[in-house]
Amino acid sequence: MFNLMFAPFVACLILVGIHAYLGIHVLERGIIFVDLALAQLAALGSITAVLAGFPLHTTQSYVFSLLFTLAGAVLFSLTRGQRNGVSQEAVIGIAYVVCAAASVLALERIPGESQHIKEMLVGNILFVSWRQIMETLFLYGLIGVFHWVFRKKFMLISSRPADAEKNGVSIRWWDFLFYAAFGLVVTSSVEIAGVLLVFSFLVIPAFCAVLLVRGFTPRLAAGWTMGMLTSLAGIYASARFDLPTGAAIVCAFGVLTFACIVISSLKKAFHAAG
Image 1 (cartoon, rainbow, N blue to C red):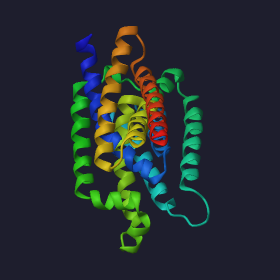
Image 2 (cartoon, rainbow, N blue to C red):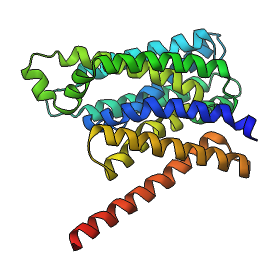
Image 3 (cartoon, helix red, strand yellow):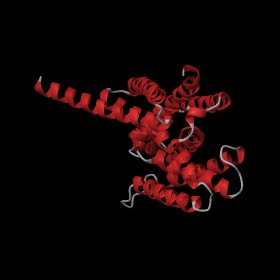
Image 4 (cartoon, helix red, strand yellow):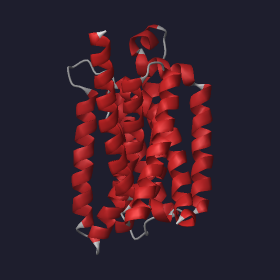
């Protein structure tokens, strides 16, 4: 069992590492569903590649997914800061639902569409190869260095966009770079883990960390720790009870969310009583 589950666990560690960090930015920006939208764009790109005659999990499929997510990066960078009363979250929601509907229509033209839907949603992390792991680690390492070098600008446009604008920072340009790097991460992650698990990695560790601690660095450390331990619990449950690995990890993150909400509520009640 250990040999079977070790590679998926290492993959989860890598995914948690980059997604928990990006998740804090997402929460700061108030665009919770951007990951779902980009993941759905990546999935639609893969499905389009299949329609064009290329198998899933090939270089051609990856290129299609990346092009679709980069198109989303352009769209989301252009719609931030609209002053016409329309929230960017509305644009993100529209992009998600249209891409989801387009995916359903495209899958109607593909034999065995139910299997494609399953792979799109929960991925195949149980069968991740060490080559995939090393390629993903290399890519995410480069993106991590990129974010580290420009961390001040990314944090400024995420948490204080008005200050960034006053200081002459091109918000749309830096937004595009943020979403483009985000799109690279999501494209690779969906190939391994599927839409649902990628969303869980992005939002839930960051959300739980924000509930429990303050400050960017403590939240990042808490998100990494909770994400890694929860992934391990989900993988163990998958092996112990013969459950689909991706779905088991997502449900484990659901338990984590409930526990953190309860702990946060108890902390508030304790401080109010004191």
